[in-house]
Image 1 (cartoon, rainbow, N blue to C red):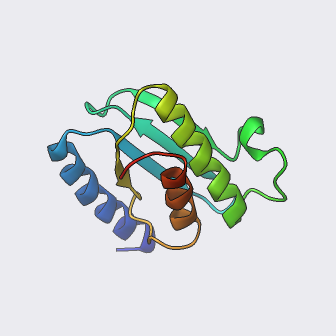
Image 2: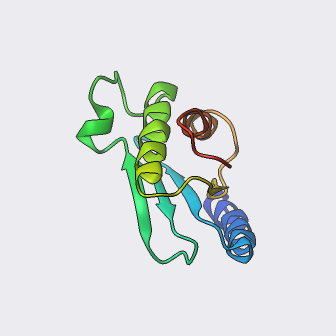
Length: 117
């Protein structure tokens, strides 16, 4: 198995557990250049809120899109949008990525903005 297959295997196991909990899910995807976050409803079929460094409203005022400041901006934006949609508590789906660096910065910013997980 290569690195990406291992990550996808870990992600599948996490998503299976979150599905059993039947709560909203904050899913994160990280690439070399950008960071994406989406909040799915409890059924897992509908996207309630989303934010990424590709969006101009999130990326404006940032020096780059692949640093901790950009991750914090995405976390804050997705939390605000989820709260506006009526979602206050979510399960954090890190998509198999290690909980450090940009993933941790996004999670911390989302918590500071009022999202509970």
